[in-house]
Length: 175
Image (cartoon, rainbow, N blue to C red; front, side, top):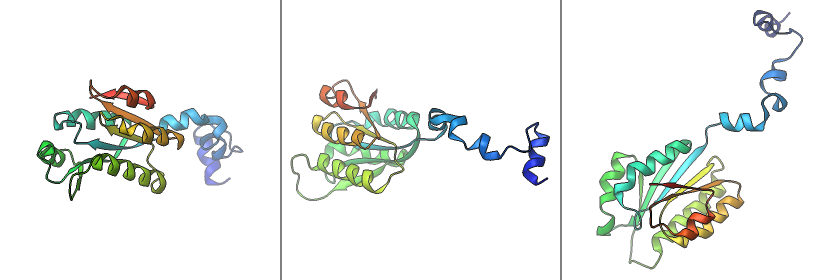
């Protein structure tokens, strides 16, 4: 007998049964079992113009509660005094800053977040959960788009987050 057979005899199994029959067969484990065992890769996108840096620890905590935190980013204009608090907090929590240069334009930060989400959806298939920390309803369409790609879209919401945004999400978590 080969090594596989000896392994089954020692463990009380049938030496004629292949390992694949028990360990890697979808009929044995089923999709729901496999999905619960797989770590979900989560990415967090923070709209620093609409969410205070005071919520940072809760944002990161909620992201980690959903799965393996792949990356977290905060988006702001480079010289915006209103988002300055994010700089020190981001270092503390290893959040990647995405700072936009140039003149302020309406929805400049929101457009960059949406563009990055679309890019990641197309180029990085390993991200399962997209968390967006924002109050703006501007993200409603991208949340719907995320869901059409069979990914989970989670809104990390404050009390004054847009109801429209909350309603299109796969899930809403308070921060």
